[in-house]
Amino acid sequence: MITAKDIEGLFGTILARIQDADLRAKTVQAWVMACERGGWKSVEDLKVMPFTLLTNTHGVNFIEHTIAVTEGAFGLAKAQENAYRKMPYKIDFDRLLAGGLLHDVGKLLEFELDGNGGFRKSLSGKCARHPISGTAVAYEVGLPDQVLNTIACHAKEGDGRPQVVETVLIHQADFGTFNPLAMMEKSTLIE
Ligand SMILES: [Fe+2]
Image 1 (cartoon, helix red, strand yellow):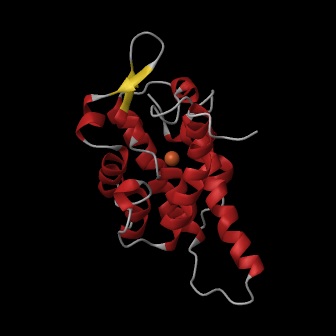
Image 2 (cartoon, rainbow, N blue to C red):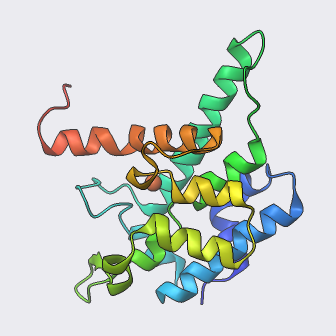
Image 3 (cartoon, rainbow, N blue to C red):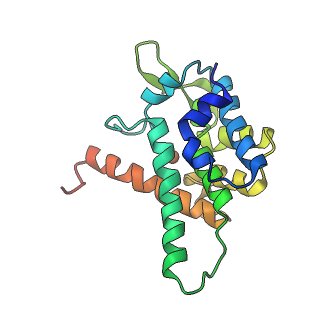
């Protein structure tokens, strides 16, 4: 079983920057619940799970991706705060960090072990992509609506939909990690 302690071990430095203790606890709780629902028994599996099945990730795992996207979105937010004389909108850093950690939590339901050392789409994943299943888990643990938006709308499901600014930043950080790999696959990434 994957416990709250395991999740804190994976994301401790980011979790520590979430000021609201309730939000921090619910973020961890959503991860634990998604691990349980997805049937994941060990964090070691999560450390070898690719973050997407849509392209070769060249070894970038699900945990590394989650950290890179969260820190990427955080960096985009900080860059604006530091560069602008006056922020035109407010960025909620708690929401940004929780949303970053949770944006792909539904992948724990969307993927499963294939029995040959690899990963494949699960029945749950065929029925509902990770933005939908992740939002369902987050709703169940009582995360706020705006955090649900960061999960529900971070991928194509959110195109053209109303979004909190934290969703916009997480989306951009997410595609900043995905697109170069997808482009390598198509030989369109120039070295
Ligand atoms: Fe992602």
